[in-house]
Amino acid sequence: MSAQNGAVGSAGQVVGLAIVDDLVDARRVLAAQRAYPESLRGLWEFPGGKAQEGEGPLEALEREISEELGYTFRAGQEVVPPAGYAGWPLDNGMTMRVWTGVLLDADGGVLKPAEVTTGTQPEGADHLELRWLILDQNTEEAVEWIPADKPIVRALVETTGCMPTFC
Image 1 (cartoon, rainbow, N blue to C red):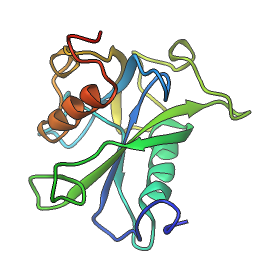
Image 2: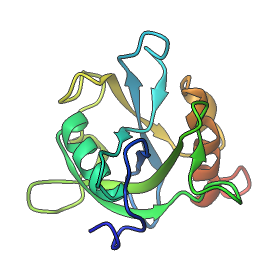
Image 3: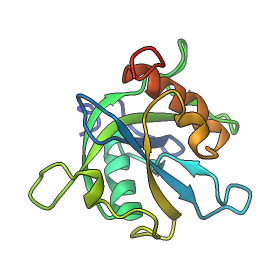
C-alpha cells in the first residue's frame, strides 16, 4: 500500500484529512477541536496524527481517522505543500501531508454533513467537538485553528476555488 499512496511511511510523519462534503464541489469542511495537549486544547485542526514505522501516509490516515472519528473515508487530492517541501512544515521540524476526503457509511456511500455527528465528542477522546464550516474566504477565521493548520486551510480554500470572487 505504501507505494500506492505516494511514499513509504516512517515514524514521525504527520498526516491529516481535510474532510469535505464533496470531492468534486466542496462547500464545507469538518473542523475538529483538540482535547490535548493542554497548550492546544480548544484549538481547531484537521483530524489525523503520526504515521507508525512502516506505514504509508494513507495507511496511517486510515488508522487515525478510524481511531479518532470511527469512520472510513475516500481520499481525494493531496493539499499541495509549499514549493520545495515534501509536506507542510511544522514547528517541531516534522512535516504534515494533508489530503481532502469524504467520510463513508458502512456500505461505502458518501456521508452527508447532516449524517456526521457534530457538536459532541466524537468516537475517540482526541477531540472535544466537531463542526462543519462553510469553505470560503472566511474559513480561516471561522474558528481558532492551530497555527500549523492555518496555511493549509488557506491552500484548501484556494484549491477548491472558494476565493472571494468565486463563492
